[in-house]
Length: 61
Image 1 (cartoon, rainbow, N blue to C red):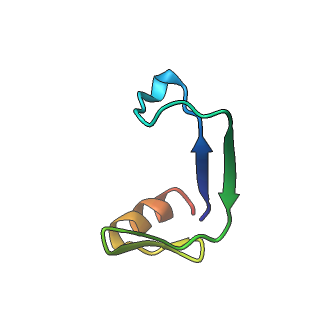
Image 2 (cartoon, rainbow, N blue to C red):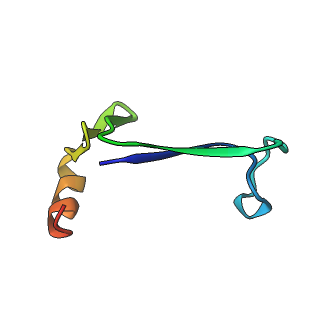
């Protein structure tokens, strides 16, 4: 149940269109709570979305 965030420069393989930046930084957040389109996917690091929780259990998570 973690998320990884990156800010700054992206190489050309990402085909981004935001322009160049002088640097890039990444950060990892543990025990994340994540909502996408008003649907709860992760709550405090646990997969809670019904469809995704089945996949997580099958993977032993």
